[in-house]
Image (cartoon, rainbow, N blue to C red):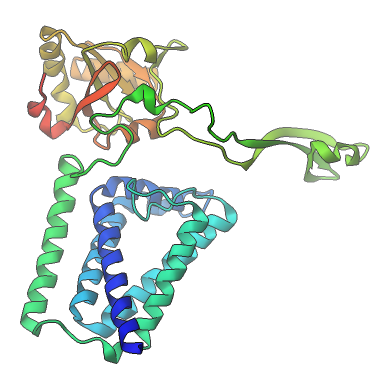
Length: 366
């Protein structure tokens, strides 16, 4: 029975680490955005790590996959199990912190493929911790599947393939798109809220300065506000979060007006998505003027979407000779549309037809 439990733990942990790592490796930029959230002042207050988020993300996901392979092979058992134990302890702490303090809504453990609530993620890590501890106390029961030479070759091959996959998706597109803006998705339908969808339960909270200390009062205890207290602010605290559509905060604003419905009714719409024009790839931006002219000859309406300021938009249009207008959209929403900066999205009647990285503009099917 003990040996059977050890074998199951080995298979379960190894497979889960490989799957989790590969899903995040499919979209390392998305995982790096999640790390930046953890590094922010609102969570762990280590913003100096933010510039290294992508490198850290790549290291962690490749490590996950390779450790999973090593465990399944039975290669370097002590090193593998100690490494897995260290990783899961860190992950468990992070997920508990996120859940208890309600600071990160989704840890990104399985990227956009599977969304878990904070306490669900913490429970998942506790289960993994239990199985890894079983492996830790039964290391002698883990036997290698092949000879040392074969195992080294497989581990090295898995590392090389992971590195190649990471390079490929960063310079092109994710091999599998799990996001709500994937090809074939209807943007307008993704923004709809069903009639029977659960509604958010929100409580109004009033903040008063009482003898130099800020205190919160709800509608139920307003009568308890002492005389002389000074009103500071009023906030809406979400008690129970209702249904959130897959696509939200997506706009096409200009001069205070949202043109989303108008543009998404077009049968031929080409979107240039550049969430930050100042950090956009220069080589990619240089391709947009020629693309604009080609798209016009094919009957396309061409617009840009960005979260940059009007001054930054004007500077980019002048620098790269761009003749199309840019419309405002939230930066996080644009990063969800596509990771590349810039990227191109073809839309017809609100349906996404094609998405390309700036390195693959030549592959556009206009």
